[in-house]
Image (cartoon, rainbow, N blue to C red):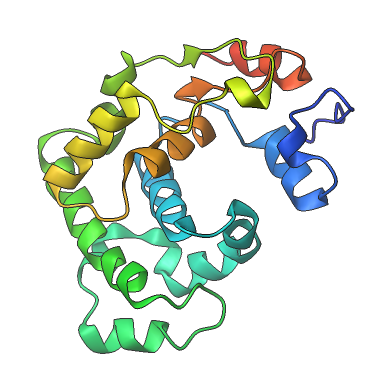
Length: 196
């Protein structure tokens, strides 16, 4: 359902771009406990490294097509030749390390899933419920935290790539592990109300 509450009070990073506004109003900060969606989002945030999120957001549908709807079973079995072919596809960011990390990350995801759900693994770092922040200004919002550092370390240990603490914190913001909508933003209270 589309939220029509975009105003001058909304988080400033989304204003002025229709794609960003829709993402902010309908996805960003909404708690997500689905392992497959969390896997997709983590990989997309990794693809963002060194780039702006809007670049990846504009290519998200392309990523879903090129990477088989982020099916970890298919991705974990990619051959080198298949990954080389994906490097030629303009629908994604054609960075060799990032493209080849998709297979490695899918394999790591499947290893974790043998022991527990990926969702439980990740949400455990925040006690299984969103951290409700009350930031007034974008200057108050951190780029990483002690929790994102711990999650990053655990993901790396599990075999993931492109999961530094800053990438992980952006991921946590996106999937609602932290509510970093500014308190002046209409979505802050709305997202708070979605917490389980």
